[in-house]
Length: 160
Image (spheres, rainbow, N blue to C red):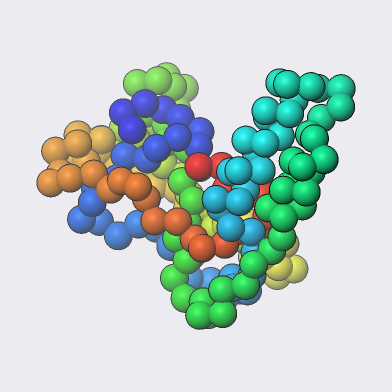
């Protein structure tokens, strides 16, 4: 959490609400993040083990199962949806990063796990937050693990 990262853990105080998407869009059907992670593990292992032939027949069957979309009927189209932490950039690591407001030294980027925003419902919702890292590390506790959506729009929307 103390390093700049893309897809890594975010420095976040436990007593502060995590960013959420509240825009109206479908959010009750998608891929489970744990299935997306397992799929990536299987594909990575297949590339390392036998890059020519890829996954075994058994692994292919599991990959098909992991690729299914799931429905979460209790999630409404306007329920707060936890955003995914995409990146955090410390000013000390990026000398060309523009200075943050009021002495902020940490820029954090979050995105909605569904690409259904904007006039054509094909855009991405992004939230950028500047903060003073010293205020977070001095807080009463850190948020671990961060909240996660029950489903994401596609495998590319969960890199955590």
